[in-house]
Image 1 (cartoon, helix red, strand yellow):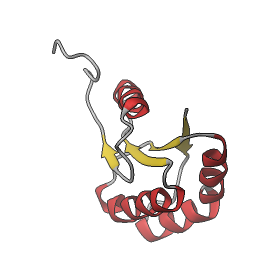
Image 2 (cartoon, one colour; image 1 turned 45 degrees about the vertical axis):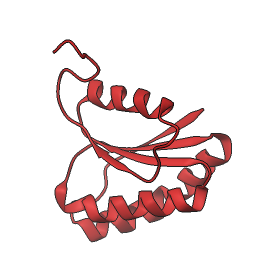
Image 3 (spheres, one colour; image 1 turned 135 degrees about the vertical axis):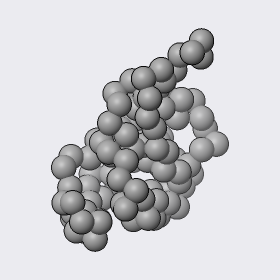
Image 4 (cartoon, one colour; image 1 turned 90 degrees about the horizontal axis):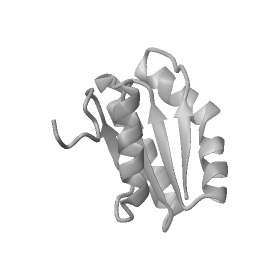
Length: 111
């Protein structure tokens, strides 16, 4: 089973956002992993200036949780995020990744 942790509003500046994530969400991520085989952390936006700290925390949580899996998904398009979460559910070899998603045809291979 894959748990999903959706991240709420964080500060605008990357260092402040990283501190807020550590303060408000790391314990919740660890608790979710106690109950699941995998964790997907969903960030509602794709802020390029936040990519470094997001990649680092996802990789660190994945190493800590091994053999359980931890991945991150960033994007505000609900269908694209849902398709990526469904894909991750069955992607047993994928861990420690931050996946940016966008688009309106996610999961529709005909387009």
